[in-house]
Image 1: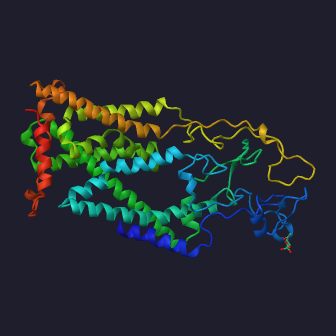
Image 2: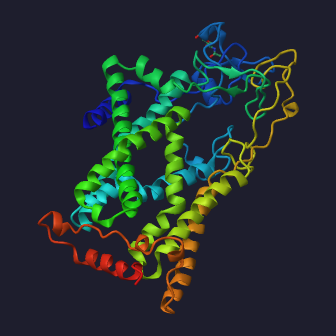
Image 3: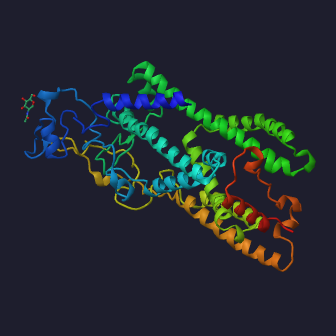
Length: 454
Ligand SMILES: *[C@@H]1O[C@H](CO)[C@@H](O)[C@H](O)[C@H]1NC(C)=O
């Protein structure tokens, strides 16, 4: 794992110190290509166009075969600030602003119930150690991932729409792009692998890829172990004889779950090979159903009950699933707002808008009938945790009132009473010689008193 991370960092250092451009510069173009402004015109020594005003590709300087596809009139940039503030932040392309913000929120807040955060906190001897560990992990994450994000710009430089490898859907037009046909670029899903394999020294490319494989494998190993342990303890351990729940038996019981969990994981991976998206989905489910109960047990233990927690968990998750299908989603991740939120229309006759056509023949961009994009993905992720929170406190308040009146907790009709007794956490003094933090003990005992139905 450490060797892998160093590999990623070394590859990133090589990239940042070697390549002159980390992202595509403005396109040089091809014979007849019109430059978008004076700056780009001067940069490439453009000549006067046939209309006597526009500045076009200089054939004497660049040759008659053309340099690129003219796909980046203004060039790309490493960072576009308006991308996070405006629906029109990425002209001339649509900007998935809600989806981007929702993803940041989902990954950040959903991570509270993820294995890395939980392990770091549970392994700490004191809250301060846990806080320091989490801040350090955040710093390391930024240090490793930011240079890798820069490699995205490099992948667009070598395999983007202006590269020799670019492929386009022929029968597509786009008014903002000025293209009557071949408007939709088809990205190469293996561009990053090809970048590592062809543009880096072979050892560095391999080392970087090993780093990515190591990170994925350590994540999945941790997740498989955690799921097996939780299945054994929270599900399997609740059924059957409490006497059997001794430590030695629980360990073998958890280990017996590992092959089952591995098989399920392998089947999902074989059927749906989208690691990044599955990660967001996993955090999304965690956020919609578990984060509110998790925060409440720490910060408001007296106001929640196991029944409220179970209803919140199921309600948050169901809301997420219902919204997944109820919200309008066309797969674009783009809201129906702003002037660029359009897809591609059917191909049209004529020359692209940015081509110098002395005898006419430039296409009529108004003829491009592009569909309005409409995709509310992201709203579902933000609404579900709110529903979960409302259910948690609402149902818990009802449950607490019942118990104050001497009636049994809501769920006791459905499940055996001992399922509603929280598993007693191992005290750190049982395992090590460290003294336990008094505030922690108090919280734990406190929530026990409330949670355990008498
Ligand atoms: C076009 O390119 C040639 C060759 O580099 C150069 O001499 C000429 O000045 C360029 N034209 C303009 C208008 O810059």
